[in-house]
Amino acid sequence: MSADLITPPMDVIAQTTWGKELSNAELDLLVQLSEPADYGQNEIVFQADSKDDTLYILLAGKLEVVKNAGLKSEMVLSTLKPGALAGELSFIDGDAHTLTLRAQRQAQVLKLKRSDFEPLIDSQPRLVFNLMRGILRASHQLQRDMNAQFMEMSRFVTNQYMG
Image 1 (cartoon, rainbow, N blue to C red):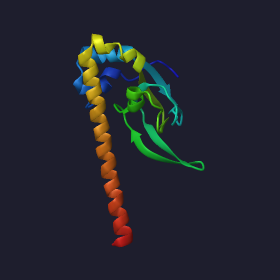
Image 2 (image 1 turned 120 degrees about the vertical axis):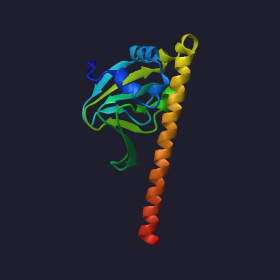
Image 3 (image 1 turned 135 degrees about the vertical axis):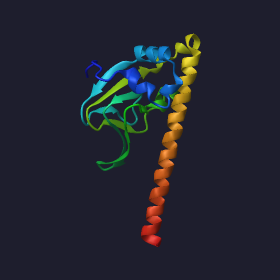
Image 4 (image 1 turned 45 degrees about the vertical axis):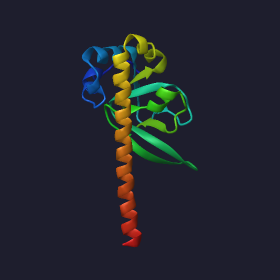
């Protein structure tokens, strides 16, 4: 993995729904606390059941959220685009990842470790609040998207077999 950033992180983050919650100084501090990483096509960012308490911020490329369906079968549940967050729940609660994250093609991310972020609770409470609010908004959007996909699939199945 290379640490050379092709994409200016602040440019990507500032355009996201959650990034708009942060001032330029807060964005700069967040980037300084993060570690850049590059992943090649099909390279695993993290495995289901692994623990790493890291928030991943996609800067460039695409990442796939993958569910192991057993017997060497898998389902791609979602494809993440630049600005997307991944690993939010493990970052917040320290539990193991429930899904696998894999680079669909060359991808560049920022990795923010919880241990680097937690000291900001006292020194930068506004940044912490705004990032957590942004994570919550991103999670709500993901839930809305998944609900819409479920409804679309349900209508398709109903029309296919009942219609």
